[in-house]
Image (cartoon, rainbow, N blue to C red; front, side, top):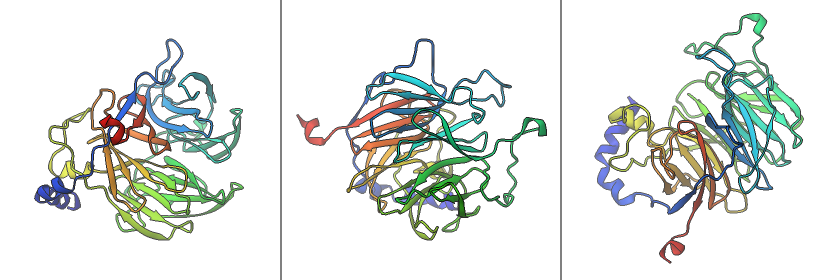
Length: 360
């Protein structure tokens, strides 16, 4: 019903939207930026992160020859230098690798990989050694099988996950893990890795989630959770108190086509517009947010921390400068974004140009 009402609203408000549409930001996508070794390809790319040195980490659903066609293990973690040069693979054949989801770098340079398939979050140091593990993979001896999705979900268990999605840290080093496809909560650990608590449950009311898919924290410790299926971003404090929420209600350009499957219309389109698939927040005193839409309409949005859409980047498509499945974003600055795409099996380095430079 909510999606249907939104579709009607968007249709009725079309003239208003046309007058208030955020600007399309001029940008370029750097061709062939990441240099993989000969004979190596990415699979689906759900994760990308950049550290303070400008090194780029890519978590990809490749190496998928091990397992049945319907559930092959698919996760490799690669590191590249600032110019896109290949450096190494981290955690080769790791026990926790099952289905790559996201990768993040903390303020100390540690590398955190979130694996949806093994229900684990794994912390590496810069040497590529495992430091901490959160959650536990099902044991093969116990007849492991895909997790069920009952509705409503079974109660969540402290310090265990069911298809986790992302991780972030506050200024005190506390750890926040979105969990995820089944548990519909945010789990909190302290800087020592000890369990603190959780908030959220399955639902559509403020403070509830249907799919907490991405998380980011600003310099004032406001926590932004991309509640993808509810098509909104919710904001909390570090104790899990709901503060506010906002949605992105920008209709796609006429003629935009989906990359996979039929192009949504009506209620299906309304349910897809502005779905927060990925969030990153720029560093520094004047922070902004970038939000990657789900597979369709497939855009990247520049958004103020208050929720105002400041600009639009790209659209759905397969070509360079187009996107499909912008599953994770890394934004080391306001003018440089890395986009990990599941549907297009790649990472794009996007450079946003100023309008003054475009005029020249």
